[in-house]
Length: 429
Image (cartoon, rainbow, N blue to C red; front, side, top):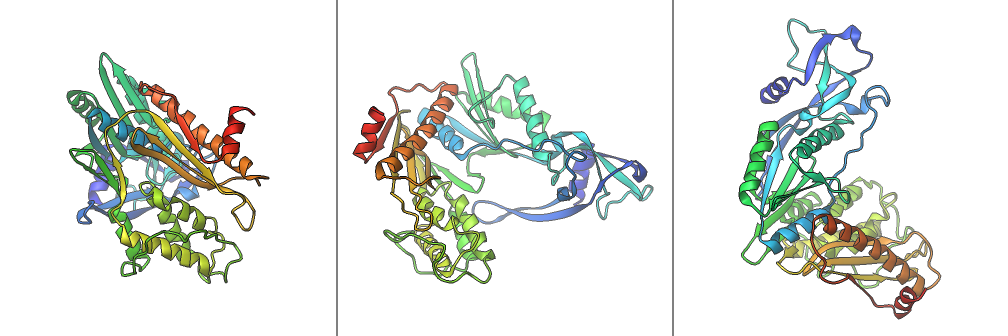
């Protein structure tokens, strides 16, 4: 706690002013957390001062709050390119990231509990820098960081605003930012180190070295490629759901299984169901094999039943048998190949069709999805054609991103579909 207060004071986060000047005073609290390494061992204990942002009033304490967050597809594309081109991948962690953002609004907060100024106990803190918990804190931090990168010569991507590109005099660098976690890769290691040094002078940065553990994803680089998995996250989820000793299952969902809102009786307490299903959603970042099954159980978060909970347990049993499965990126071409498929009126309640796709960049799977379509299709041709259109939008976006990255496309993208009528319709509407 003393270290946190020292960091706040060093950053000149606030000024103490008489409380009579404040129109609206926010409370604050201390949040404690144990930060662990990828193997589960304790890295350090953290204490963070957080403002109670849910007391903020729109138009008084904040205005705009949106802050872009990098897409997981973008991360996979950058990692795939780095492996194909043989680039090193470095990881940085920003210490007290939100403290670097400048506030444009007048925000007042009570003094931290246990660290009140003895000479001015009734004064309040007028915030000059953003603080964790404020609604505009992520936006202020991202704006400050992106402005600094632009000064260094980086250009922000239009396809993904959290991707920054430096391409000057043969030096090619890519930087991805996800709140306070940063990935850097490029064609010259000396320039990467120079960039890390520059960032360390402007912000409190911690160089974590080569990519190993990023956003709960374990990365293992070998001589043949890069392996991404969420082994620790999976094991923690099984323990949290009390399924660590369950019998493994070969598949995440039964063949032809469809969940209905009227299946069985509603759960008396759906909180555990929602918590586990929410955790399963993040697991699909490296596990495309459970995407369809997770999509099925996510559709009943509002009123889950006993049958839905059994379906969730089947997914957990499947994970029990394959906790280390993930993605493996290998060097290869940069051609795009996509596969599209859809059922016909598969949802027993709404009769909407469920479609899915997967998109490969060379040999590496970079994007996938499984979602219900938002209209009722009147034929299997219409359902399949609609899913082809959805897949095409993803291909167009990825091509735009690759164009910004100056990655050539040796051949036009190829879209595979198993419905002859849809292919004919796409050829001649």
